Amino acid sequence: MVYDPSRYEARQRAYSGSFEAQSAMNEYARMLAQTRGSRQLGDFRRSVTEQVPVFGRTYGKRGLYGQGIKSGIFSKALSDFGARTTRDEARLLEDLAGQQRQYDLTGSQYLRQYESQLADLEGERARDIGNTASGLLAL
Image (cartoon, rainbow, N blue to C red; front, side):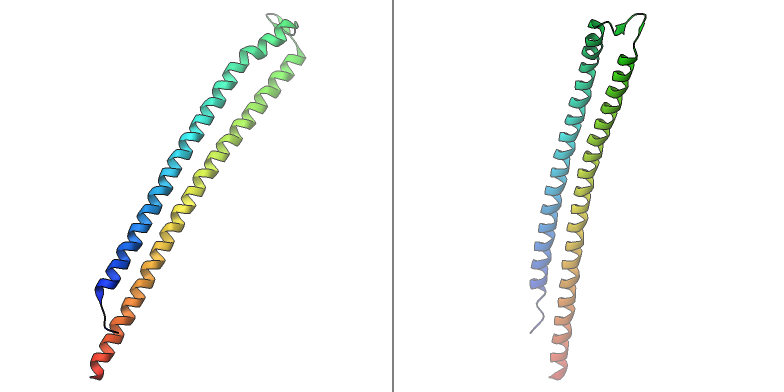
């Protein structure tokens, strides 16, 4: 077989275009996931902020919370509310970070695949050049 550089250049452009398209889709999906996660976190924090006054009023109506009242029941409920809120927010942040790590992993896999394709292409090119040179020397 005679060495034809156009075959390799076309494949190299195809690999490059595929890698760029995959990377762009991955980055767009990452951005959407980050936006969704930020929105969920904002909604969660807003929800907690809205629950605090209602929380106090429900205990105040029963005489367990108010000026000069130190209720152990209210203190325990407030402590539980704070712990649950902190735990739920930490889980939400952990999930968001996990999604972002997944997009990082996908991006690095695309890069490794692209680099592997280019290395294979260079190997084929070198073999074809060697075969062409051997054929010419045999003449």
